[in-house]
Length: 129
Image (tube, rainbow, N blue to C red; front, side, top):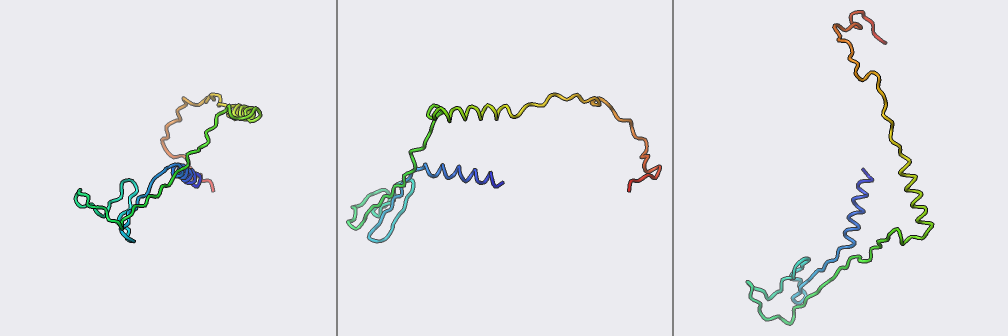
């Protein structure tokens, strides 16, 4: 259970470290009017789709949170010869470590036990103590 939760946590950590987003804030004076994460922040001069004159006291602030873009993706050819040799030997021995089981012959596979007419242990009063 701990291993699975740790794996999910690491997956979300990689996902959120690579996501970029912007936060837009609109101030009228010192008062925060609107904060927006995925769309444009609402201005203080917007009334029913008609934009009025922009007031001189209003200001927009945009914070950009950049995600990690330099993820290292390396291939087998990027490794030096000793590392390639180790990985090849390790994978070969790991694959051959597990051998399949031979099919076992079960001699009593088609044997049908006799039908029990009565419970003999109870009839003979023989009990294991």
